[in-house]
Length: 413
Image (cartoon, rainbow, N blue to C red; front, side, top):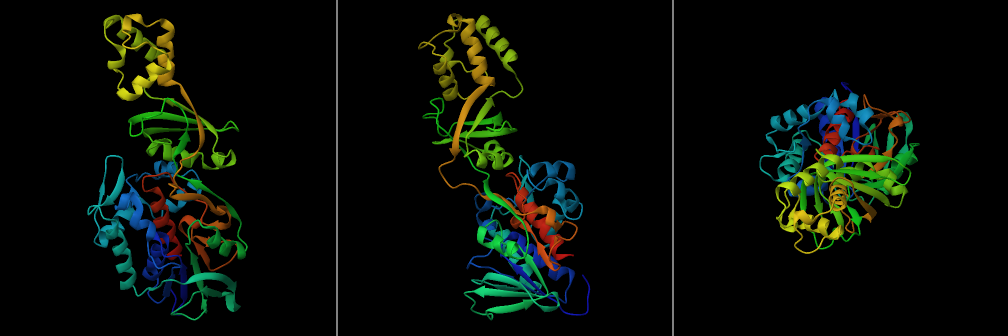
């Protein structure tokens, strides 16, 4: 993007994608006049609260073939985009701007300061250094196509700017809100319905009662939607007051987001608490343990690496007597235990009671965007980045990575 004529670029949205789009645009064309318009009085709100206030910047998954697997929607389009700007580019960019990132055991990456303000300040300071104007409390209420392929932006609550401004290019980075997506719709774009993603499951089952806080480090979940579609995820799970949460549950919700929305969040969840084992192998382990420890009291003998409180629930579920020893277990009881460990079935009754979803799926149809430039195929000069697109990733830094990637490309066209 090199030209002698100064062009005016409006970036609508002051989040991660908005700042990175603006920074990229100013970086690639020092002659451009770049302005960020944020409807609220807060910049980079999600950056500041993500990762428990530490900001999960990205995920240390540099292989593109593996990286794209973490996007239930948008993986095909992002494959090419990641060849232009991906994880290693993100790490290098922040390092070149004074921010070192660290990798945690689960591959999530955070600033070494463990402070999300480190990332926010980096972006704000870089924008300032590049001469990018940042205007708060100015909501773009309408975008009209003006003469000479320019854009006429109308504002609500304009204070420092006139209520109408003309720009040569617009980068829409407004996130997944209905009102902001109306801007794209008004310019002829198709909007895929917005539905929640990344949430916990409401499960009403006596096996989980009074177990809030019990966690499992690695179990396998399989969710079966009423339409027959199946989704799998493996990893840590946490029992809550209302059902199940934890990384594996949240990731599973992203994979099945649209199916769950369509079913009213009714589904069947099957759990294998020992993913490396199956029903037959666990039955064999139980039978062998019974032979070797016939006098041991089963309730205090959770030898299968299952939390003791949940193990007690399993024994209660199969109706063992108090302080039953292993020699008293029938073959049928051992089979039932094996089923509860490897094939436990729960009824999902809804989303978690708290509004814990951090992203939505849905947004501007990906078919209408050129991912080599992030430019609209319908309106020349209109670009998109971030959550405004029908792209969403699972937890672990993947949503920020798609924001950095699409933002960088949108600004470097």
